[in-house]
Every structure is written in structure tokens, then in C-alpha cells.
Image (cartoon, rainbow, N blue to C red; front, side, top):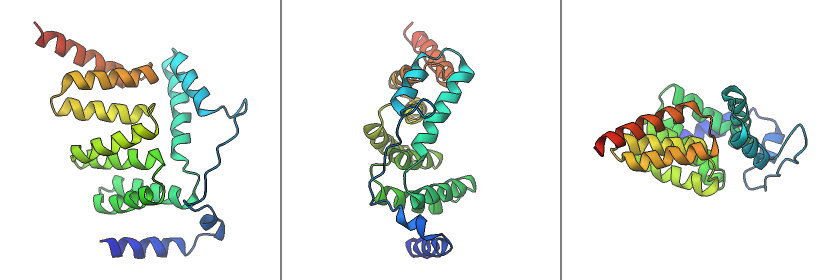
Length: 196
């Protein structure tokens, strides 16, 4: 499988312009300069925490997610998109090969770890998913997607009190996330009922 992946990987880059290789994963990624039209990610998180309208909060969260997806490397971004396509087609092994390569080339890219955590979750390999979520959160503790993924795994494996805390952490970062609000309320009710 690895040799097939390497052949596909090499063949896919034959048609890419030289600039795609110039932005390799070994180069240091430049941080975008914050401006009024392009605020820093910290500013976006501040807005997300203060926003009380669900749709406006979702737009801010989408902008944060877009920042997370930008690795700063054209080759990493292409492999991430190939992994997404493989995941949609339920070609788990192909997706895993791409994501393993992303993590090898860019170990500090939190979204690579998060995407592999999602893949392991889809494959019902919760232990590996949790390990990748842990790495994601070490790199980006505010990753609300990873926090919700953690909460889902904890809930599905019967650790409801821990799941409730994970949802609480996600809501601390993104208070208007409707799905997390619903799950938090449901789990709170379940745990209150269990205590009676």
C-alpha cells in the first residue's frame, strides 16, 4: 500500500507548477499580517466568544476553520484535499496514507492531526482518534472541532461526565455552537437523572 501511495504521490505532482514545490513543508510558514479586513486568529477567537447571534458566530467559526486549513504549503494543502476526497469515497486506506504523509511532513500542522482523528473516528478506531485529538489540542487548545470530537467519543464509550466537560470546553471557545449546546443540555439532563 505504501508503494502505491508513493507512486500516486509522485505521479500527481508531475503536472504541478514549480511554485508548488517551492512552498515545501520544510520551509517556515509565514504568519499572515493582521489587518482590519484580515484580523489575527486571536482576534477572530475573541469575536467568536463575544458573538451572540448564531449565524454571525458560524461565519466567524468558518473563517477560523479556513485559517486552520491553510498549512502554508501548496503540497500539504493538495494532500489534505486528496485525503478529503478519499474519505468521502470511504477509501480509508488511501486517506490514511495521505494524512500520515501530511503529519510526517508537517508535524506542527494541527489540522493534519485533526483530520486524521476524524478519519479514525469514521473508522470507529476511537483510541487512535483520541490520540490524534490530544495532539491537535496540544497544538491548538481552542480547536472546537477537536473538542467536540473528543466529547462524541467519550459519550459513545460511556464516559458521559467527561464528555460533558469536553462539550463545556468547546462552548467556552465557541458559545453559540448549536450542536454542542444541544448535546451539553442532553448530557446534563441524563447525568442529573442518573444522580436521582
